Image (cartoon, rainbow, N blue to C red; front, side, top):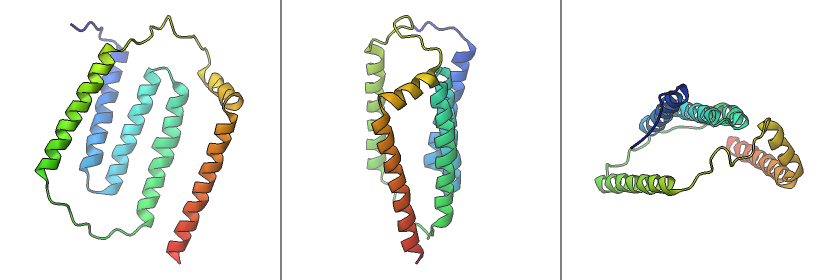
Length: 171
């Protein structure tokens, strides 16, 4: 039914998939927030590895730099700077867990079916680009310069707003 060769890329895919799935499960299973952030960082690093397997080196670099680095560090600082009182655990709701499990299985089935019936382009149909980072840079600073600048302004305003909100809570 399935025709595949046992290559290094195939093994790397499954190792990275196991890292990502394990990290995601641990993320929702841990009770200490710092442990959750470490598990989330493992998911981000696994995703960067997947991007490398897809030969998207720039996206992998951004994934490590922004998500695995900056977001994880930001979450740790946010945890350290906020007060944590004792949290009352919610009662176990078997109906909610059952509905969630069934929904997850249905979603998996729909996605599996959609992937199996979709027509993906073959490598011969895709354009060959030698330097992906250069092409992304050209697109970013020519065709998409206005949205790029708007996002930078939006992030700056959000950063200033976060500082103002944090300063009000400190007073």
